[in-house]
Image (cartoon, rainbow, N blue to C red):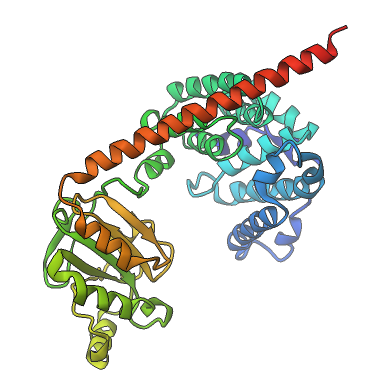
Length: 399
């Protein structure tokens, strides 16, 4: 059940008390109100980050300074979310989980209205309504214990228990993602949140997180080039593969052509394959570009999907944010580079071509072992420091 249902029951009415009125949006009727509200929500999100963002607001050192700056913006955005819920009813695209985030932060910053509202929802007779309140309060408690590993462990256990009750809940996945990114007391707790998203939760947001492209991991996809060459995560094994997401008619989208042409000429015979992923309204634009720019030497295969001309599914799997974009896979089919920045491609390609099929497994295992060792060591240091700090605090307050 979405938080929309909680709102419709009036259990968060207190949230709106004292919030900036957004009634002006309706002064001339509901025409385009949906777009106006969504735009205002995004603008408010930008204002929140401009004011310092969640990281600074959650820092114990800066909370007092940040509270008066960020509190009005959080309340303003909650008001907008409430308006959007009224307009769009049960539309799943309404990000009501953002309201949980805002309420948790408001409560962490000491806002009494937010705290009372969350307490009310957490004690609701309807168990599904109470679930949302408990999740938001747990997020608040997590942030309030950002310098107390022992207290955060207990909060994690609470959230993990909620995950067992509702692994498909999207808002809970959002809460766990926020716990991972903001305020984990130790690297170990951050890792536990990651593991929960990867292994325990099944919501759309969790699945999106699980399918996110990660360096040193394979990528599942299936596509074909304009010439009919089938490509997928298995077929690219054995060669080093570079995907270039680009646009023939955008100057910025053509940025790396000369460098990639050099790589193609230099390394193709050594095991490099380059494949373009074209984002272009019309396929003939690619043909025209190739006919008019013989000097560009775009001779490598191209992928183009007429059903998704500006958002190729492979680009989606790579989480491409803009063109041009470059992704490089090694001979074992593992993603080794995925960025809008060209980086030191020649050096990277030369290194990957020296690697043999099957070598990645050992390298990845060693890298993962070192990473886990680092997590354990850093977590121990933080816990030891927190323990000493508590002991000093206890000694100074003892009569």
